[in-house]
Amino acid sequence: MVHPRSKITTLTEFVIQRQYEYPHAKGALTRLLNDIATAAKIVNREINAAGLVDILGTVGKENVQGETQKKLDVFANEMFITALKGGGECCAIASEENEKVITFSNDFSHLGKYVVAMDPLDGSSNIESNVSIGTIFSIYRRISEIGSGTQEDLLQPGLNLVASGYVIYGSSTMLVYTTGKGVNGFTLDPSVGIFCLSHPDMKYPDTANIYSINEGNYIYFPEGVKQYIKYCQESDPESFRPYTSRYIGSLVADFHRNLIKGGIFLYPGTTKNPNGKLRLLYECSPMAFIAEQAGGKASTGTQRVMAIQPETLHQRVPFYTGPKWMVEKIEALIKGSTE
Ligand code: AHG
Ligand code: MN
Ligand code: MN
Image (tube, rainbow, N blue to C red; front, side, top):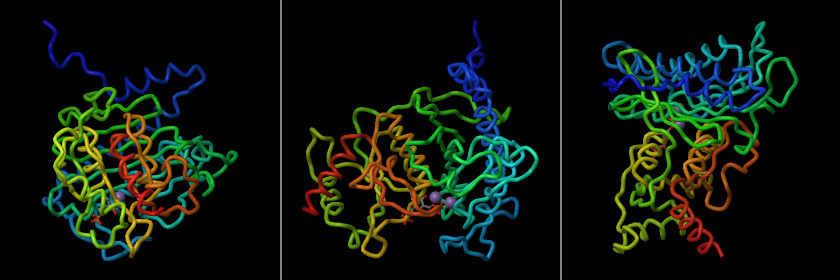
């Protein structure tokens, strides 16, 4: 009899198998993804111990976004930077927690072919309440020649992404990533500390009936978004309406649930913040790559997120993502309301 656990594929095995599809690959991306997975496991350990060790609360400082930094934000940021610096495959990082690009000039990192943009801890306002949080990462090939990486290496559109992914620290911990050949999810087996393939070839389900938006901001939303919310609440059994409303306030957790169960995530611009809240480089672009690879779509309401050329590291964009037909509906309403 085959033991039910004897047929596992680990993340490392999976990435190496994929590497053989590229005859010139030398394993650099495999090593880089391993570095990210290692840092994620350490962050996961700390999150699991929150409440027991002194890791909850703020550090009394604000990051470049003017947001209060939590101890776990700082810890996660340091963990990922350390792992990427030590790994030698990455020559520069853009992080939500650092105003400027972090460049590496040690003996080996300046030879690294890749740069990484990351949100080391997403949903950090939820830490105290034991709600799922995450990490988001984007991997680009550097544009600059050998030497320490540059800001230009990071200011690339999502269409240039080599890989992107997220880690969700939830009821179980998962790493979900794409290199442009579908989306695959790996669950951390905590007894051995290994990510194992659990969700091969993830796709949005054909039927979807969830909408996720911070409706408290309703009065500040553009007309098309207000119309869409009303549309979600109308009764029409054929199109599964009224939809169910689900909103955690952690992009990774809201996105992941909607990918599994079928739903649209919306973070619109408002009258106060016309570009919304979410950051293009390390929140919207990486999630857009995953959404598209899972058969879905990601839009600013008027533009494909993947096609936007970033101008600054921390630039924000309105963000709508989920199954294609759901995103196309909100795009149509936004278009109709501005004509
Ligand atoms: P971060 O914790 O990295 O700053 O991100 C928080 C983001 C995102 O995770 C979530 O979708 C959004 O903030 C929620 O914002 P609201 O509280 O305005 O709904
Ligand atoms: Mn975030
Ligand atoms: Mn964050």
